[in-house]
Amino acid sequence: MSRSRTAVLAALALVAGASGTALAVVPGDPGIAAIPCSVDYKVQNDWGTGFTTAVTVTNNSTAKSSWSVKWAYAGTQKVTNAWNAKVTQSGTAVTAANESYNGTLATGGSVSFGFQGTYTGTNAIPTAFTLDGVTCNVDSGTGGPTDPGTPTDPGTPSAKVDNPYAGAKVYVNPEWSAKAAAETGGSRISNQPTGVWLDRIAAINGVNGGMGLRAHLDAALAQKGSGEEVVQLVVYDLPGRDCSALASNGELGPTEIDKYKTQFIDPIATILADSKYAGLRIVTTIEIDSLPNLVTNTGSRATATPACDTMLANGNYVKGVGYALHKLGAIPNVYNYIDAGHHGWLGWDDNFAPSATLFKQAATAEGATVNDVHGFITNTANYSALKENNFTINDSVAGKSVRESKWVDWNRYVDELSYAQAFRTQLVSVGFNSGIGMLIDTSRNGWGGTARPTGPGATTSVDTYVNGGRYDRRIHIGNWCNQSGAGLGERPKTAPATGIDAYVWMKPPGESDGSSSAISNDEGKGFDRMCDPTYTGNPRNGNSMSGALPNAPLSGHWFSAQFQQLMQNAYPPL
Image (cartoon, rainbow, N blue to C red):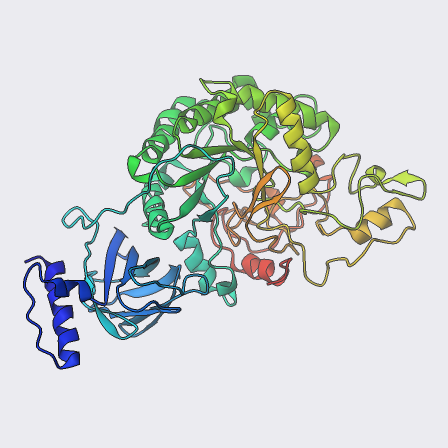
């Protein structure tokens, strides 16, 4: 008799004992239908010191408006964070209770939740579970090669939808969530969805014992349940990556386009094409900062760099983006969004239309077509305000247009929403599909707290008017590294405005943009003075102070001080 079957009989014996009635159970006995509940506990991923688990609870008794599942571990397992349930632990005893949105559990209905944990020694599966104090059966497996258990149903693949975020949950990265929850006050946002960054070849399989791409996708299946689930990936490892910012330089040299294709994009595409993941909606952010650099930081411009001139000349940014779009766009449930800078980068007349033209060139390179592009994303990992309410581009003060102010500096846009909507129109005009959608990264553009203006600035001059009223409190709009005074922005939200598929937190709040001083590393990351709070600037930021926070770690590493600041200055407030 199998373990799960034995557990069924044991559960029935307990029920019979509780009622004082002797119940003889034999295979096929209809009494089995009276089992009050069942629990399916699966270890999805186990990397020796930690694990992720999916749990499905089925209620066969009276319908419930709230529920609580309990079990105990035989070893050292500790739950570190959870999704779709409130999980607490005291010693070896664990309790998982419903969230406000999934307390209803009908007769015959099921609910799923998941969690991440750590352990030393062995990771034995619990042998007994209760639902609201009643013992349930156990029908589970580790999901590993020696005990595959019941496969997680990925769902039925469907045709692409217009907006992948519509009607879907979005994946909560358990690794980021655990870091956020460990911070004082972090539990207020630790359940928010963030992007998973594939920023080097090693990240595909996981770095330093962390989760790789398959582990994240498996965890997303566990979170998915019976509904729709979006997984957000940042594909970010072009040859000669980020030619104007040393902090985010990559591991591949300017000419290593073949390595990018065969060792980075191809393995990612193979994993995403696995039929196991066909029921997930996979959103990819394609190569942030790359194509915009070719527009603004090349040639005779004061902002030009030799590295960007090299990448323009060899064409490997265009080839790499085209190849990624082609390979990933061929997968039915993948939605490609190309990075489109932000309004403080491409909003000027000299940059706006040329950028759209260059994006079209990349989207039709290396076998790609515009049909491989579902949309574009702006403000990725940046700080530009979503909506400036205290002034518009059409205002004039003391006989001067807002465009003449030092802050706006002849830009045609003052915030991300107006830029994203206008740029979408421009992209369609050069040949992109009329149904493309835009994403806006709002993870760090809230600019709340005590420094947030409550109304327009003084009308003494156009500069006092703009500077006194702008939410974005950066010293210069070109400052991008670990900005002092920043706050969390709008929470992730689906279809918040015309032409916008979603507000997203593609950049996980609390992950550094770059180190504030040189740090030796094997991650291919250099030291950029724009991350140094003592730096007095360059032409790209108007020779202004950098505005960066001190004591920052390498890009992508956890920066507690920044995370605390982002929560403190969040707008809307937490």
